[in-house]
Length: 163
Ligand code: PNS
Image (cartoon, rainbow, N blue to C red; front, side, top):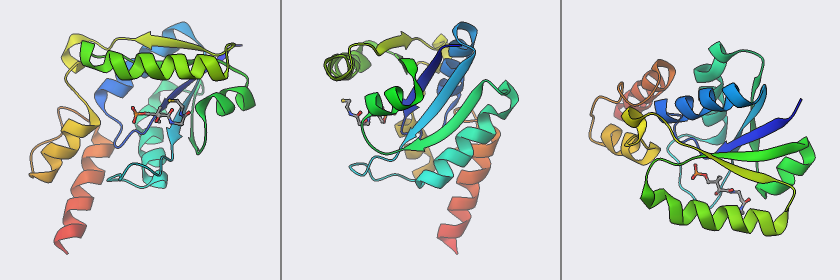
């Protein structure tokens, strides 16, 4: 059964991510949500929290979804897992430049690993982890953007900051 990776920073996991993950499961029976431990990014949630939240958000999707953290080159992870493709969500034209460059870099590194782009439903095209973190920073309601476990985690983070 071909396995695919759905990689990202997932800081935090959003309804847009869930939408892309559900679409991936319509095409493939096995998906690894690969949570990148990317040292160049300052994240709101640490790697363990991002993995735990992605797991909680995807729990209802069944055994076909695994969530794992990973540090290094994605193509190395794909080879290690025997994954046939990397799935990336493409929301709007502005995503394209970065995604295109990444897909070609990955193809140079590992021509056997394809990149598959999936588009979320229109209602999620504007949802990004960056927007969610910004709304959170200013105490806004994030419940329309992220699943309940993330809403709760953000609420706890806010409460901890207040002391
Ligand atoms: O959700 P994001 O932040 O857009 O995900 C970016 C991610 C983690 C997929 C990307 O930074 C990545 O692939 N990192 C691993 C390092 C790597 O493989 N780099 C080569 C591709 S440019």
